[in-house]
Length: 261
Image (cartoon, rainbow, N blue to C red; front, side, top):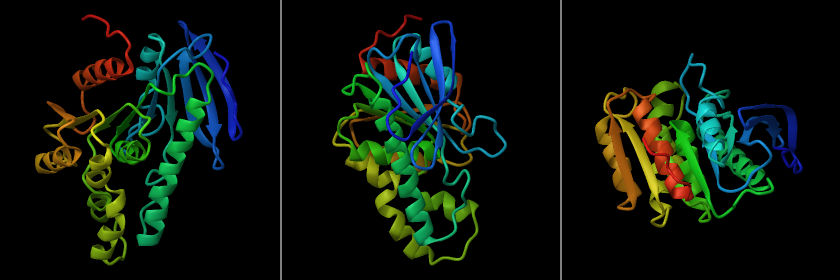
């Protein structure tokens, strides 16, 4: 697999093992780290764009979270692009104007990652799925709503509104009503409702300290009847069962044969 390097994409290194190539790259004006993962010899079909969660102190709170899933998908002919988030991973919420711009900025970064993925020769632009966890899922919902060419979306353990977490877990001086109103167009309960009936899988945990069941129910209602909700015996990180079901769901939406159990 030899990656195409459109403007703004820099190849740092590559490693191939067991028929799968992982390219360590940077992309965009901010030189965001990313991984491009696919079959050795190049992309030949569908693709997935992944955006990770935020969990302080956890070594997977970055682009590595979905790396093993991407390797598994590559063995089935699927190319993946894994991005690395900035807000609120490396910048803390601090106020209305900053935070609205920062959410828009990481959404634009995710879109740039999608463009870099689609630039790869052999990637089928008509078969691309977004997968995101926690904040990564919230960003993915926004990009999915804005791009009708994307065929499906998986959102893992999001909250309903950016303000739910920003105002609770970061302390800063702001008019909370004005803040919530400014963030509302970016909120998952807003963007998921704009998906025009395209497939959505929502994955929640029954023991999630960050996403109570009433919030999960609100998100599911906002996503509409086309969305499928699955709840697992797990915490916010979800579980192996959730991973296996997510992989099977994604492969089915991409038109790739699901391996028998």
